[in-house]
Amino acid sequence: PVSSIILDPLECERILKDLKSFVGNKDWYDGMGIPYRRGYLFYGTPGSGKTALITALAGELKYSIALINMADHMMDDSRFLHLLNKAPPDTIIVLEDIDCAFQDRAKQIEGDKRFSGMSGGVTHSGLLNAIDGVTNSDGRILIMTTNYIERLDSALIRPGRVDFAREFKNASDAQICGMFLRFFPDSPDTHAWNFLTGVRSHNADISMARLQAYMMSHRDPVKAMENTAKLASNTSTTAFDGSDPIVPPELELSHFLGKS
Image 1 (spheres, one colour):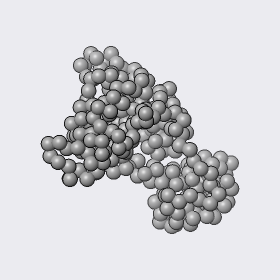
Image 2 (tube, rainbow, N blue to C red):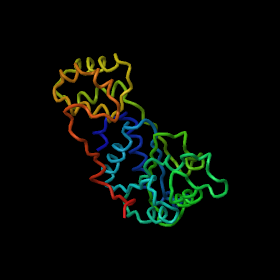
Image 3 (cartoon, rainbow, N blue to C red):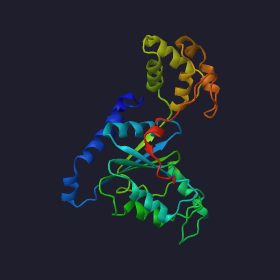
């Protein structure tokens, strides 16, 4: 559930409320002559909780997740359209790392505008037309994710294609304390504050994924408080000593439509 996600609770509830309002109001959309679909953009720091929130939202709605990998080298216009249309009802379609479609955009040939990030040749118009298409779009929920919003074409994220955008940042003070107390619920609040003070003393920005990996490798709250220098010095791609491998929860829920 959304309550299990250590993000801003008011923001999470706002997104969930928007989704539930959409799911229950098909008649309103039909009466207003507005296409019955909803688009979201989750952008920001890698490892900041975008995928975790999508998984939680799907769980709240009892929806499946259809993940389309935008970096798939086999992708082209027809395949992308096929994957969108193939998604079953009650599914959140996720276009993961949508910025991959806009790599080296300045080098694209005007007129063709093929995305150089996709050697298969998905075109600019092909992407937009597939998203806007009326075929099998009734009730569609589409979430695009990116770590680099500045790489996205303004036409892709204009109102009507993206109805709701949310930025994800590195762990806030509240999230760091919340993560500590999630792993050590019997610890006093002063321990969480001491942990936060230790983390911030190293002037390091910590992603939620990195913080979770650290907590999983420190099952003792005292050791977790003592080793904050290790948390601050580790890169996001380096495992902490003694940590268990983390299997992203979405792997258990998703229909990977990008795979044959």
